[in-house]
Length: 328
Length: 274
Image 1 (spheres, rainbow over the protein chains, first blue to last red):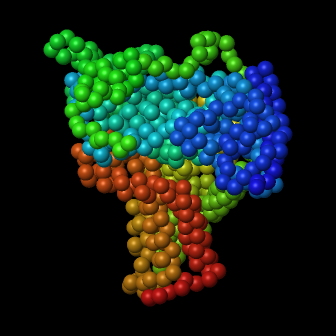
Image 2: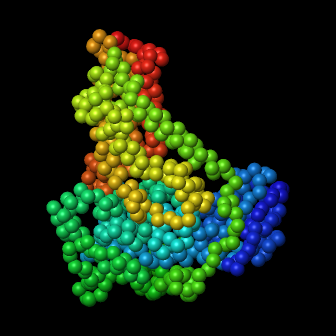
Image 3: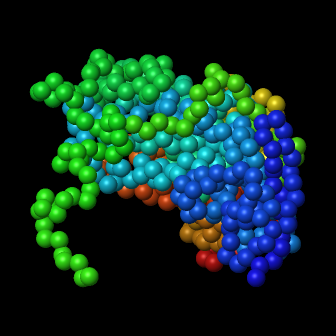
């Protein structure tokens, strides 16, 4: 049998709202999301919240608990005192839809502006080869579950709405770093992109993104600062700039890496000048005039079946293995 | 093809939705103000002590054992005590000119542009923001995109300078193994000087710019195995950059205070040999 504890939950929508008080039963082993569900089941059937996996892997239940951006499903009730009031509010940085649900489309817009992974021309999917130590750094950033807690806590947009246009936020800095460090990404203008289009310079490395990341990605130390240093290489370091001019490294670099034609879905990547001396190439085309199929261009999710269109389960006379007799 | 869940009409071109109307500036109930307060007091106290010491112009050298405080190294003004200046005395004796005029500005720049100290003073002094999910103390914010903060990008040059200064400090620590009669000697002062230099090297090498220069800038670690190993080593140190930043503030102040105390004759050095 649990105990009754005091909760305050923000209720309302874009036209306004306030924090309301509730006393809810709490049992051993429960998390904040369980309490929200109990509230829905008992006192407030119309309380809106977003959730999916309850395991800290989908990034849906991002809320602010006692003022701190957290995942509702990963915040244990045992971390609070028995008599402590727990305040649950929606993410502040994004427009509210209703109660604890916010409109996070800002993040999806920034995601679409970021130029996609661009393998070197002539390397087809399935031919990618890379060494583990080369791809390790990028892999850390793949842990991101897109809960947008870092985007929410970053004071650049949290406290200054007007910066939203110029600033992409920590989640997209780790995306830029992931691709710039990727051994098979052929774009060499990601640093310029991060500086000119993503607003990397707005970050003053106060590390709140790292503090709130539920996946414990070292956003600042491993992505933002390395990207800042890479931008310095390109833009602010007078010695490197001079060396590049004298030894004409620009042209040397572009020979080893073919430029990609990817500009991101919205084409915002077009805004950054390409440093490559070679002209952009069209996508690789095979002898029959057709491109390799990737899942991005398919009407359905996932790769195409190598066996053609088939429905499962297959008829018994068409399978090529012995199906064990069923026992009954 | 799956589409993202953005509804038409919402976003930059569509009607602007508003944020949740929460009146409280922050709902944090923990002591979020404690960390910036400690940083404020710690850095403030250290800067005060260092400023006083730098403009004191005395008690910086123990001639008997050749102990020189790092705040006065290398000693470059005309008023430098006999034996304390290793590089000559090109600077005049004016009270505003510190003895180590060629090194202190670079050390200050190195720490001012350090990625850890930036976090520390942006939070504790500039309140931008004082803590996570606590409002910024300023109405406008342009980060490090404009003058003067755009010069934070010059951190690597301060790092190069700090490397050279660390070499000088190392030399200071080595030649301090001296007894009163000029032979080999070893005392508590040597332990403090060497400890300070070791921590200074650890702090300098753990710098984020150093991590980038040694290997972080590479795209293919597999093609540069030596630089990869160096990067791995620097990365391990780099994790402790904050701790090392505070430890070196402590060792610098301790070293300076110990030399000051010996020089002023408040107590004498504990000698092990000579």
